Length: 253
Image 1 (cartoon, helix red, strand yellow):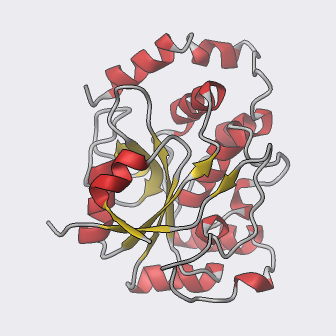
Image 2: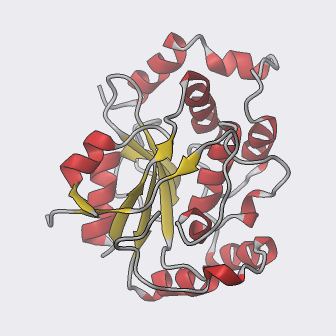
């Protein structure tokens, strides 16, 4: 299945994943290291009347971060459409959408906002750090060896606007500091606080853990982009699951 970027942006909801595959030397290195056909993963954040956003980590700083209003490297919150176009047209990536079922509820969205507040601006690790952390965090997974294509597999815009969502949701940042966790992602908050640098899969994993979708007890570097494609057997909690990849047709710029 494939859909246009306009259709994908319209469909995407908080917690949906966007995975990317490129052909550059660094892209191929990540794919080979992680035994998967993808080299980047980001998570959609879609709140009320805000434009759809992409929550991820990258080395580039071509787009303004919607949390700080500045251009920065590392963990960032971008306009989703703009981010997808950058990854397609500047970085030469193909993109796919995986939808979270059932959709994220209000408590999960509040957990996302708390995680954004803690992690945004966290630096991206150096190449040496990245390789070492992946090597240390990965576990053998023989069923992820196929590197086949993903097609047809079963499976206002600034910080003020986002901060207003936190206020509307009941000042979730203060609740987190006072210990009112509502049963969502205690270890995820600890992981977010402990990360001094973060790559894309760690950001998604820590956020999913804070949302209560991933089990506690795993270090963030256990995850890599390949954990989030349908060829892996990543199990989510509470009956949640990720749908099959939907290829997104991204227009050239």
